[in-house]
Length: 136
Image 1 (spheres, rainbow, N blue to C red):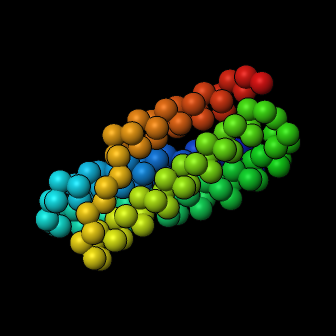
Image 2 (image 1 turned 120 degrees about the vertical axis):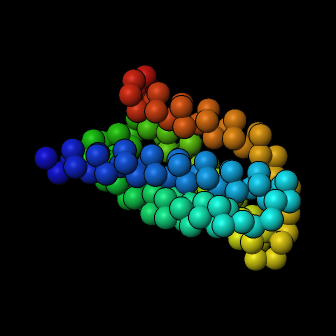
């Protein structure tokens, strides 16, 4: 029973974290357009903080529990998925740092956001594929 509760929390936290990553992308795209900080961008920034930080922490903690309890840490599919999650965590850090710099120092981010958004979609889709099918 505990396993299924942790699994449910993990899925919900993944959704929150991915929504936070998407909001980070929206904020960075707005910053690259040199859009002035508006009440809407401030609301989005607050939502991003509420979603992505707890989401990433819960994803890692519940994911480690699930990997250990399911003995998946030796599986190839899990190693690939863990690598994807590590890369997405790096994206989260890069995005958060650029957002902080923009709203604190007005430094315009120069990240290739179209590439990041594409990579984000592909990696999340592939991670879901790996979890559902466990192909190898």
